[in-house]
Length: 245
Ligand code: MN
Image 1 (cartoon, rainbow, N blue to C red):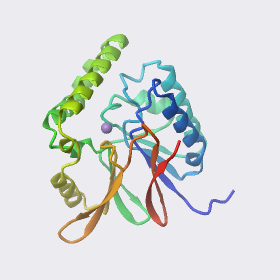
Image 2 (cartoon, rainbow, N blue to C red; image 1 turned 60 degrees about the horizontal axis):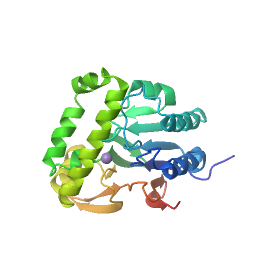
Image 3 (spheres, rainbow, N blue to C red; image 1 turned 180 degrees about the vertical axis):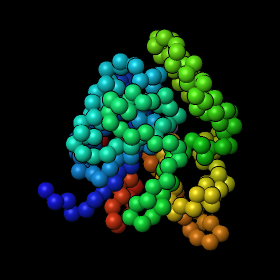
């Protein structure tokens, strides 16, 4: 079959969880459907609601891993960047699924445009308490200490961390949980990219960003709680679209 156009797909913030099976079902349909015809699939973090280690035998996650493996084996490259929920994903996951792990941020070039991919949480610098947690949990020593704990202990820790995070989110203002505009402008300046593509904030939109010499664009993917969200990028450029359930 000859494809008329080559499309690269971007998704993030699915928060896959056996407690919300409809998200997983939509993700499986997405992988077997349009992702199978794509040029590549980029997952920009928070694919999973939580990840306590690649040794977790969680059956819901096992189904998702198999589906990713099938997509990679069919010839579609899949790239994954850590979010603030699944930052413990590591080499064993990459081996099992065939997915390529990306560091945050990662620059790519697409149809002649320079694009910087990120999960997005590093841009939310107004939330100082969150940034401290981020610094701690991304430290390799902290991660090694966590991995050395028994699985049940890690699962209990993740559960309490999620609860605390939810209480914290409910207690702070909406604005401090969004990206900081100076951080965005600074990123465009230092990276010299045309487009910044990220998730995390669950505020899907395409923003023009005025720089001294040009207008850049910031594309924000949405979460998958009520419906899917995808950026489809072909020779006509990027389109941010909802995926109805
Ligand atoms: Mn996130």
